[in-house]
Image 1 (tube, rainbow over the protein chains, first blue to last red):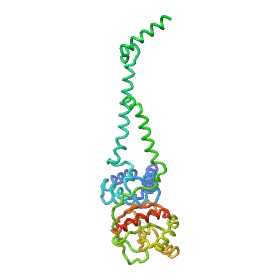
Image 2: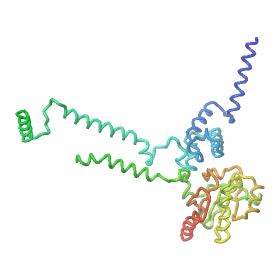
Image 3: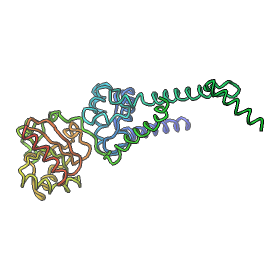
Image 4: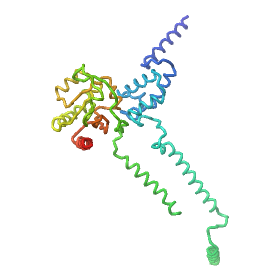
Length: 157
Length: 176
């Protein structure tokens, strides 16, 4: 009996705790999840290294309120992102959209990796050619003759 | 050809260096506004000094003007206020105000105390107009042309140097 009572008390405590964190009442859990993911992907314009979920600045609070109202009134993710971008610019997106301006950003790392692979392949190809024991083909016939002569002179000393 | 390949890393390094050099000293706090060359967003808010009077975006048309977002809680607004007064009084510049997330009574006292450079003052207690204007920190000043299109935005206080830049842009708008 006491155990049951304790369980009930603990459970009621936990619900109080979550209520204190969440100041917004969502219509369903899916909306809550979308609020969480969107507010962590939108950048606060005033405090630039924080998203609007983490920032305490008044503008971040305003944007959270706006986000909440938009989600509650049934806006989809694209509408929310468009709303923010038309007011604050591409700047507010922590995950920039694919446009002509951001091609470098999106494809740059892959391109650098590709260049790196090509360079490694070229260098290792050259190494193989220069491996000892194999005839060095980069010398012309005249040069080979001169090399033989020089080696002979060295042996004769 | 081989020589060119040997030089390639150097060329890449110089290009990267120039690119990064270009970024040094730029103010990262200033975000380019996506509202440039767009009209002032629609709104219908009461005038700060006359609760009965409604101001809309149409009231801001007619001649090139500055739209200054200010509040009594904003220390930098106080700092630029004397400059705004000078501009309105000595040069006849039309300045519209947006009283942003402020208290009407406090704002009225402020204007009585420090003089009122504004031709019109829009009372925006919830910051809705501010949000639609992409305001993220007062003071912010928008340059409007005669059709009420936003042509330029300045974030931060207006001082003599900023004003001389703004004045040039404003003169160009007057010519057009």
